[in-house]
Amino acid sequence: MTNTKKPSSVWFDELSSKEVADAAKNGTVVIFPLGSVEAHSDHLPLCTDSIQSENIAFEVAKKTGCLVAPPFRYGICNATRNFPGTLTIGFDTLYRVTLDVLSELIRNGFNRIIVMSGHAGNSHMVALRLAAQEIVIKNGEISPGKVRIMVLSDFDIAEEIISKYAKAGDGHAGTLETSRMMAIQPNLIKCKGQADTWNLPRFEVIAHPEKLIPSAVNGDPTIASAINGEKINQYIIKKVEKLVRELETK
Image 1 (cartoon, rainbow, N blue to C red):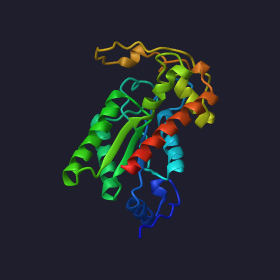
Image 2: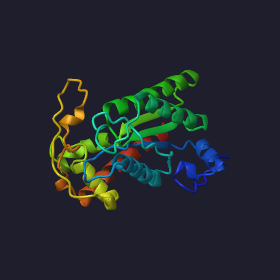
Image 3: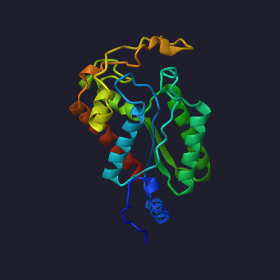
Image 4: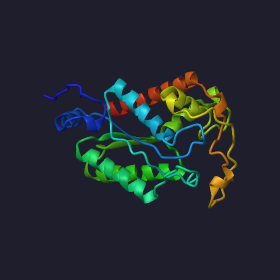
């Protein structure tokens, strides 16, 4: 008979080997949160993207009983790479790390996985999706339909409600991100911040995009609030909870 005893923690690496084995046998979903070390102007910490995805993963795990894999706090940050504090990694590095982590989770018996990034850069997300695609294709050839992986940024979900809480075009270190951080970890807010807008050409490839991003802000953090941040976070939590339930039942 399958052991359905509740694990002692939602964090994968806080469990014992036996608890992990039992969780795998029970078909437990695993969320792998990723972030970045990236400049978010003067008012938000470098770990903003990481804090957001880890918080969502943790809250969803408490509600659903899924597990949270050890987070990876580095990402591809092309547009902000020359701002002080940004630590960007290569495309192949992120692709390989994601591929290896997913492979190891599957080797341990977990075949329902959500890769959730707090950083939503184009190259960054492509690396995650390509790694997941390779895993699904490889395992699908061995056992069709066995492995299911979802790849998303929590900002993909937050974007759905921008019009309720921020001005059109709000993004990096703007109203939404600042509000969310005020709700999650207000002690990390450095100052009130300033409004600004990115003006990057739509199609042109630029060698130094940071020159067109004077303050690393795209939006208006001055109108952010912890109350709205909590509403935004709860919206994302509910959406990701639904994704976990979907993976559990199919």
